[in-house]
Length: 416
Image (cartoon, rainbow, N blue to C red; front, side, top):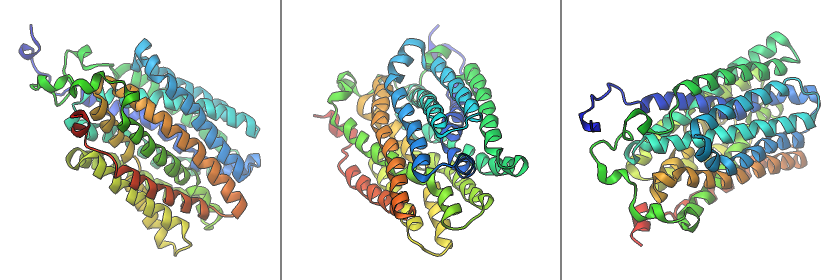
C-alpha cells in the first residue's frame, strides 16, 4: 500500500512535535538559562557574588552549551535526536537540583556549566527536528512556535521566583532551583513519550511537502556540498554570533539593572521580566512567518533594528516610560532570530544537512554568548553601571544589521 492510498490522519503528527518542542525549549532554555536573571539578585546577595562573578557564571553556562553543540550532530546520528533530547533534559534537572545545595561561587559556576551542556544538547537537535518534520514553506512558522517556549518560562519564572522568595525568605533561591529542576524532569518524560525523529516513523512526509515530490529532496546539488565550503553558512554564523553576544547581555543583566541601578523592587522587576516573556510569545510566530513571506534577510534586519533600539533605551538614563518601550522592543522580537536561522540554514544547505549546519552556526553563536556577559560584567564593574554594556550591545546589533545586508538569496547561491 502506498502512502497516497493510506487514510490521511485528521492532524499531521508534526503538530504534536511542535507543542512538545515548545515544552523542550521551555525547559532547556527558558528555565535552564533565562530564569537565571530572576535568580541572580537573591543568589548573589546570599553568596556574596560580585558583578564579575555573576557574569562569569553566565559565561560558564555558555561554555558548557558550546561544548555540547560540538557533539550534537554526531550524537544525534548515533542515538537519535529524541534520546539525546531526553538525556539532556535530565542532565539539566540534576545539575540544577545540585545548584540548590551550592555554597560557593565555584560550585555554582561548575554546575551551571553542566546545565549549559544540557541546554545545548537539547536545543540544537530539537530545532533540527523542525527541519525534518516541516517543508521550507512553513518551517519559519513552525520554528517560531517552538522557540516561544522560552517566553512561557520567563513569564512563569518572573512570577514564581519572587513568590517563592517571599515565602521562604533569603534562601528562596535554593527552593526555586529545586522546583525548576522538578519541572524540567517532568518535561523530559513528556518528550520521551511524544517526540519522534522523522516523519517516516509515522508513515508521513514532512508537513507542507505532500504532493510535491520534486521538492522533497531539498535544494539540489547544494545538499551535496560540504557546509564548511558554503560561504553563506559562515555569514549566518557571524550574524548569529552578534545575536548571541547582544541578547544575552540584556537577558542576564536587565533585572539586576532594574533592581540595583533603577531602584525597583525584585517583585516589580519580575513583572518587567514577565512582560518580556509575554511579548516574546508573539516573537517567533510573527517574525518566523514574516520571514517565510519577505525572506530571511529582511526579517533579520527588522529584528536587529528593534533589538538595537531596546538596548539604547535601557542604556540611556531616560524616564521610566522608556524602560517599558525597551521591554516592548526586546520582547516582541526576543526569540525570532533562532526561528529565522533554523529556516535559513535549511534553505542554504538542504534539510539533510540542516542539523549539522545549525549546530555549526550555533557553535559560533556560542562564542558570542560566552564573551557577552563576561565583557558586560567587567565593564559594569569598572564603570559602576550597566549603561556602557547596553550601549556596547546596541553597537553590535548595528553591526549585525550591516552584516545581514550582505546575505544573498539561497537560489542565487545555488545557481553558481
